[in-house]
Length: 185
Ligand SMILES: [Zn+2]
Ligand SMILES: [Zn+2]
Picture (cartoon, rainbow, N blue to C red):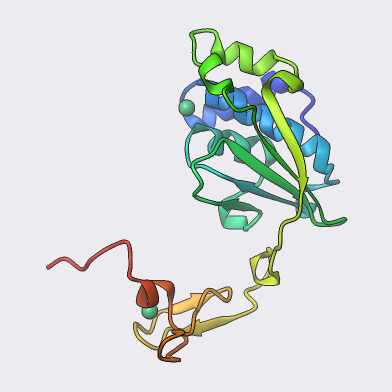
């Protein structure tokens, strides 16, 4: 799995994302470097963590072929311009990010082309990392599905909790910590 034709990949990203922005160029560059480093033979060996939900997220998913719903794309809400590429076969993981301060330099009108063509060393930082992936996080059939003892809804993939104060459980995250929504009338 390598990105050999950057412009062809970029075009597919633009088609999916809906506009051409520096984020598409950067996402393609992150994906290209990450795939080179992690070197998965095919998609089933690859897990990608993307660290924001802005433009680069769309480019990373198109350029790598990973998908949230296939569980090979993981979204972590860090608000950072970075992604981590894991080769499940040999457990090698690389985190690729933007050189600090690079965003400002790349925000001018020529940024899209600059980001697409500048050498790796002038745009990106890459570090070998370890990711503690639980087996419940991997693609495949759910290993654990339990009903929440409070709301009754099914909780998949070991995402249930026991209340540390009361011992009550299993509980979904919303029932334990409070939800992102409130019930309206
Ligand atoms: Zn965009
Ligand atoms: Zn619940």
